[in-house]
Amino acid sequence: MLYGTIKSDLRINFKGGLLKLKILLCPDSFKGSLSSHEVCLAIKRGFLRCTHDVEIVEKPVADGGEGTIEALYYGLGGRLVKTEITGPLWEKVNAQYLILDDQKTAIIEMAQAAGLTLVPIQKRNPRYTTTFGVGELVNNAVKNGCKKVILAIGGSATNDGGMGALAALGVKFYDENQKLLPGMGENLLKVQTIDTEGAEKAMNEVEILIASDVKNSLFGPEGAASVYAPQKGANEEDVFFLDKGLMHFSKVIREKTGKEVDSIPGSGAAGGIGAGFCGFFNAQITSGIQLIMELLNFEEEIATSDLIISGEGKIDQQTLYGKVISGIYELCQRHNKPLMLLAGKIEEEAYSIYGDKVLALCSIVNGPINENEAFLKASYLLENVSYNIAKLIFRNFI
Image (cartoon, rainbow, N blue to C red):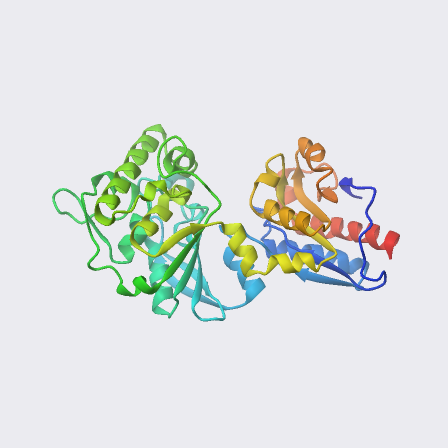
């Protein structure tokens, strides 16, 4: 049984009427249960249970945050590089990044080195966490010959303005007594002088693209600390302290480099790491979802598909203002292609909001079920709802 709404006019323009239907699967992850790749596999199994007379193209998507490496690895191939780095609590952790087939482009996820999931709840406090490991990953990629680094930020446990990452790349920060400062939020206010003499010279030849769709300023009411630090374990006093620290840090960067990093849109994303990179290296902040879609050649895939299926863990009134779904929706509108959305949970207001915007809006939950059980059965539920959708399509129109 299908739980959701499907437009009564479900007719899809088949190429000539009898040719194989091309279906593009491009979901986001179902956070807490399935990666975007696993979502693709479950939907595909459901359709193939109904018919093999269909062409299914899998394009797992990410928004430039967690899951970006996986999405691009399955979409583009490349080589995964595993290494040991410094985690957000200064302990050693295992991480990986992706080098694309051109051997010159590295995809790095900030969450691999400074992710919130790497910090136990009782130890979360962005005053003391670091992005040092992010800098180590960048350095490793550069030493492996990469000239372009795409840094996917999101899901971070940090609020150090990129100070830790910069330190790993050779930038030195000193207090008023010329004492060397470790890179973390606690030390932002203490920085008085910056020494770039020891910075990795190879970084001068590297282009850094910081993938983010967050537009927050570096500091202030909409800044990194005010908006995101509480989610990382900061209390009210911590937020005030970190906000002042980022303001001071941007001032010291301006005095050293002449760059107004606090005026860059999105400089407050992921604890201000973009501001730090833009202040010292050839870096720019760019739309994560647009960058991912360009790399995966999404517009052509959508233009040549007959049906597009996407989705995420929860669909509510903010969904079309989000990252992955909004990007896909815009391309479907541009090319007049039908879009189906699947979700683990659909808020009541979503049906009235999206009823006329998408071909179908379906929950994968088929009856009363608690959240934990839904998470555990997500793959099974996705497969079954996809099977029912396939039956509806192929029974009526083929």
